[in-house]
Image (tube, each protein chain N blue to C red):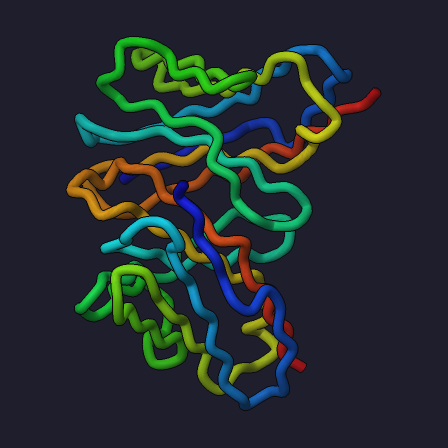
Length: 118
Length: 113
């Protein structure tokens, strides 16, 4: 159990276009999903927390108009990188936490999406 | 503020030997969770083990055990009988009252024959 999928696994796009990344919890319901960004040889940096049925909470320095997050159901969250530029090229990885009250419950991660903007 | 520190950027271990990956943390939350994740070259983050701050016993999951020393604020990962497939980045992380999972900088483990 606790499988999280992401789609696509990699994407190459032209500068100025928008890219949507999906994150799904396959065998459990996730009230909360998280979006991270990871640059090469660095750790994961939390971008935003996505709660089902409400607006996402963005970390300081993350542009909410550029990184649109939608958490429409208990099993799906999407991240849309709008008007992508080469500096947005990165590894984007989502995680999901089972519907629970404890923030210390385990987050399960998707396999990640490698975005390359030309 | 919460902080995770991993002081070993890289570690080498021979196959079948045990290895300890260090992790220290800092938090003012009375209740928190400590996690270890493995990230192979494919990029996925694989959950390995969890330790709750109020757990009396050290967590174990197969070949993985977490050496939890609360007074020292350390949560070291011990991998017994290393295998070549254990070569990867290992991240220590913690969460507290907030939803956020705070990661350390990671340790790259190389297992050699």
